[in-house]
Length: 490
Ligand code: BGC
Image 1 (tube, rainbow, N blue to C red):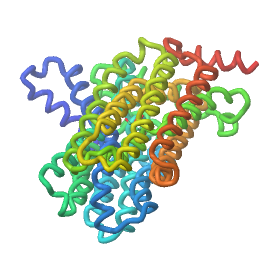
Image 2: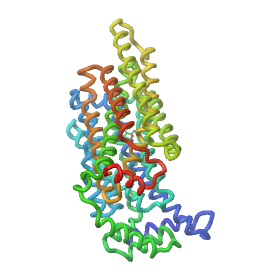
Image 3: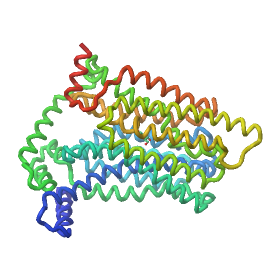
Image 4: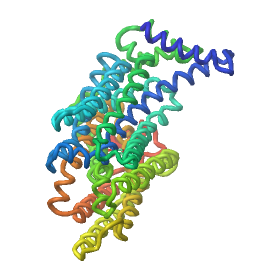
C-alpha cells in the first residue's frame, strides 16, 4: 500500500510542479493518473503487437541460423499465440490473487525474460521457450490490463480506454515492422539481426515493469480483499474530491452481484446459447479468414510475390501492412459507434473476401510467370498482390478487427460476462494458433492460391452466418441486449 500511496503522491507532485499550478488538483491529478493507466494498457497491447509483427522479418534469419524445418518454423511463429492462450487462463486468477497491478508486473517481467531468452537462444528449443514465455506475458497482460483500465477509468472514457488496446496492438505490429525495415536497410541481415529484433522487445518490457511499479492498485481489488481503508485512500488519491463513500458503496454492490454470478454451467445453458454462439463464432471467423497468416508471414508472401531483397520486403511489409493497419484501425474506432456492427462486419468481409480472391489469382499468375522463366524484382502480379493485401488489411481493420472485440464484450449478460468473454478470447487465440501453426504447411500442400481462396471461402461462410445469426447491438443498452436474448429463447 505504501508503494501505491507513493505512486499517487508522485502523480500529484508531477501535477503540483506543472506550469498550470496546484489550483486544479482534482482534474490534473486525474489526468496524470489516467495517463499511467492508459500507458499500462498501451504497453500491454503494444508488446503483443510487437511480438507478433517482429517474427515476420525475423523468420528467414532464424531459419538460416538454426536450419529449421517447415514444422519448426511454424512452431517458432505460433508459440507466442499458444503462450497467450495459457496466459489468458492464468491471467484472471492471478489478477484476483495478487492484484491487477502485480499481475501486470508479472506480465512485464515475462516480456523481459522472454525477450532475453530469444535474444540469447543458443538453439531452437530455447528460442521456442522464449516465444512461449513472452506469449504467457501477453495473455496475462491481455486480461489484467483491460480489467485494470475498466476498473479505474471514469465511465465516460471506459470505451476508449479499452479500444486503445486494439489500436496499441496495431501500433506494436507497425513498430516491429519499422525496426525490421531499419535493420534490413542497415544490411545487418547476415549477422543474426533477428536477435536484435526479438531482443529489442525487452526495452518496452522494462518500461512496462516500471509503469506497473508506480501504478496504483485498483480500489475494487482492494475492496475484494477487505482492505476498505486502503481502497478509500487510493480512490481519493486518484480522483480527489469524489464522493468516496458513494464510490465504495457502488463497488460493494457490484461485488455482491458478482458473488451471485452465473456458473460455467449457466453460460452453456440454453438461455445464453445465442450470445455464446455469436461471441465464439465471431472469435473464430476473425482468425480463420487469415489476418494473422498475413501479419506473421507477410515477408514470405512478398518474397513469393517477387520482392527479392530483404530491404524491399521489409519496407513493403512495414508500410503496406503495418502502417495501413494502424491508420484504418484509428478510423474504425472513430466510427464504430455511429455505423452498425453488422454493417461494418458484412462490408468488411466483402472487402476481405474479394481481396483474397484477387491475391489467390495473382499467385496463379506468379506461378505461371515463374514457369515461363520471368522473374527478378516485383512483377505486375507482385504489385497486384500488395494492392490486394492492402485492401484486405483495410477491410479487416475497420470491421472484424475492432468490431469482434466490441461485440464479444457486449453480448453477454452481466451474470456470465466474465466467463463468456474469457472463453471467447481463449477460442480466438486457439484459432490464431491453428492458423499460424499450419499456414506454411497448407501453402506447401495445396499452394498459395488455394490457401488464399480457402480463407476467401471462410469469408463467404462468415458473411452468411453473420447475416443470419448476429443481431445489431449498436445503441442498445446492455440490458436491452440481454432482453433480446431472453425473448428469442422463449
Ligand atoms: C486480432 C489479432 C490481430 C490484430 C491485427 C486483432 O483484433 O485479434 O489476432 O493480429 O487484430 O490488427
